Image (cartoon, rainbow, N blue to C red; front, side, top):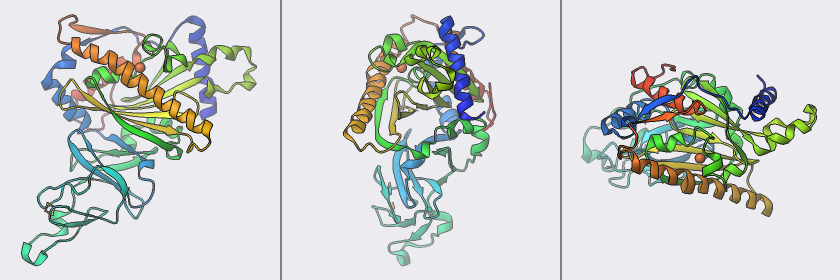
Length: 389
Ligand code: FES
Ligand SMILES: [Fe+2]
């Protein structure tokens, strides 16, 4: 469906719910055992299966804006370099020298002609190939075949760079995304401007992630931030295998029936949130701004680190544009750090109290249900790209 007609269809769905005080619903409530939030063995198995053996979107394409751009970072205790080769292809390497393991690049981004190890000065080209050895005549036998950087499977699609964190495992990005790829394409993520990026500590992975999946809490938790713009407890829900799209109604939706349909600008009255399993949320909250969130499990079940990327439709130039972008940046920081994760910290603190043996996920929280069902489905399957649920 073309984006314009799909927008109209979404607006009609949302208006129907607005009339009936309704929302998309799951068939029944869902019971999620507390054990699944706190059991350390289950946690370790899930991190391994879902984060180390499925492709993750680790960066936006625009973070590697030109050939020779690189970004060095650590994701879940794994040091990485993402680099766009002179050929324009994005690649991913473990940021560990093949001599005795020093990190080649400090965390950060820039451009590089080559990577030179700070320990004993082995050199690698930006395609990861070992190209030079300090004191080569004294060292002994090593070669590019055996001692080039360890490459991770990497693919670029829909403005995102997808990486498999386990060396030696491959994936087909088209298989992984399926129809979700078309949905992501509607965002034109390549064309945005990266205004800010920051890491936010949060509660455990499932507690943190659930907050991205429903609007049931918007009128209470976010009454002074994003809740000012969205209609609480009205969510459209569509799934694409493990991935999901939810759509919130903006408060302006209620004005639409007073206007002739020919004048409707549907995208002004809804917000699409794209949820890539297991940890990627792309959400537009206000006008020409977009928030990309990657929620990474911490070393224990109680913590996460969320990388927030604040995007603007274009580089803010005028004072008004700068103010609007900074206001968006602050509102999403506040909404997530001071509201969602403050509530989440309380949830996390009480998980082991015995107050609940299980959580009841409502019919009005279908995306939360789909998430938990998807986790269970992948945990029951070792096939990397099995579509599930
Ligand atoms: S550890 Fe890199 S050259 Fe020795
Ligand atoms: Fe929230």
